[in-house]
Amino acid sequence: MSELRECGPNPFGLYQVKEGDTAASIGDRFGVPPAVIASLNHIKDFPSAGAMLVLPSFNGQTHVVRPGEDIPSICRAYAMAEEEFVRINGCTFVYPMQRVFVRRR
Image 1 (cartoon, rainbow, N blue to C red):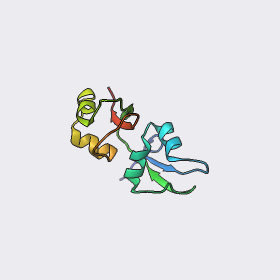
Image 2 (tube, rainbow, N blue to C red):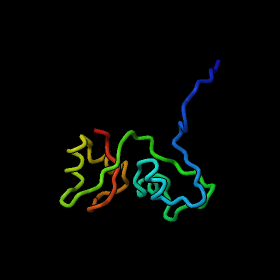
Image 3 (cartoon, helix red, strand yellow):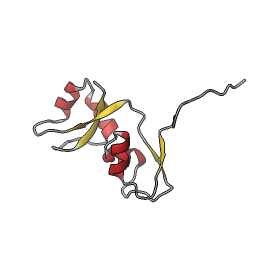
Image 4 (cartoon, rainbow, N blue to C red):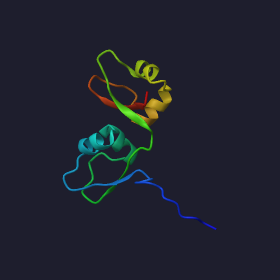
């Protein structure tokens, strides 16, 4: 027999695009870099209002890449494996001022 339980808000990490939304505005609201949203949803162009996006369920934070940082140095700072970083962020290199998703300290 099944039982219904309270699951909290948005347990599946879905977000319905609203008029005026951009990848940057959604990313700022949920603490997810826009590149992660694009990679996770396999999109090149931002969808129109009404479309559903999947947001990551990874419990992390954003990090702004500083000059001189690379993936190995960021991974050491946040105790992440490089493979995990690449999987979560969908990129194999970083550049200064890029926002990436990392583990919470």
